[in-house]
Length: 418
Image (tube, rainbow, N blue to C red; front, side, top):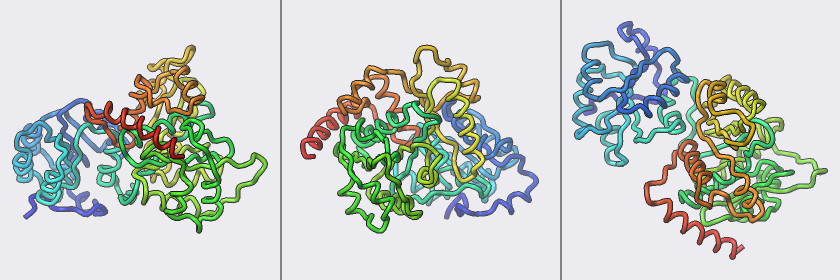
């Protein structure tokens, strides 16, 4: 019999709101400062002013809850505990049975997850290290008061890349991110080049272009898994590109159902779909933006980019169905640019990911068609950090070097075949 009551995702808070003894909506206890900072940022977004958070052990948390009021949502960290199930069992005897319990730990064990969620009735479990995308995706539905739309779990995850203004390097970041996920992290990945007139994803990744994406937008009834298999251009063993290059004088007539149907089809074939968006001033981009489960805003360290980034963040915040975008600071270190402190002060927090200014590597990459992330260095490490933040993909120690060599071989074979 469950010690915590199992709760539906959409269960109303109305019954709990009537209990005046509860002082806060969310109470969190974590074991490390890094997790505390991430949770604080998420809680500021979902429950501003209605939460408390402390960096304390599970045993201390149990003692406090025994003496004080019970929250409606409890986040508890069991990492480092020798007997986490026993500790949670003791906690269950302290709190009220209708409390939603969200657990953080350090065990990547499917059996442990089942014991928590099915045996103890824990609402959700996440293992460390935490990142914004992971916490928002899995804890968000429980933290929101009914205005958070949970995306369907089935199929691949859609990640949109949007530059706050032209020239900030959005296509470079999106292309290398997709390559890294596919060829290093070994996830089946597709990158869609949303700019059908002047897109350059195919140049950066060394592939040719055809009319596949143009056809998908104009005649969605022709799009199925076989169509995608024939139209997507292979970069490596697990990374494909879908794009088109149409004449500048041609007018593209987009079927209103096309973007939704395309994403629905490719989600069945790929683990991750990255979309390089040319902007938000056209109908295609706006529709594709709605389909993304995580959006990435790319900026450079200039005053104009900072201003526009703040405007984009405010726009996303006003749309309740969209989670806060990740902020990527690209070209960091370019001479004459803003400092990290100036940018952080402007946002009120540091950017989520910082990409260094490496013009020589990027220029050589564009000429050769070999992704810049295929070369070891700061740029590749930053793309790895982005994959962890945006896609919750973390490379275990010692595995990246093996994957790097393997991906190089796969890329050579794929290009030979094409």
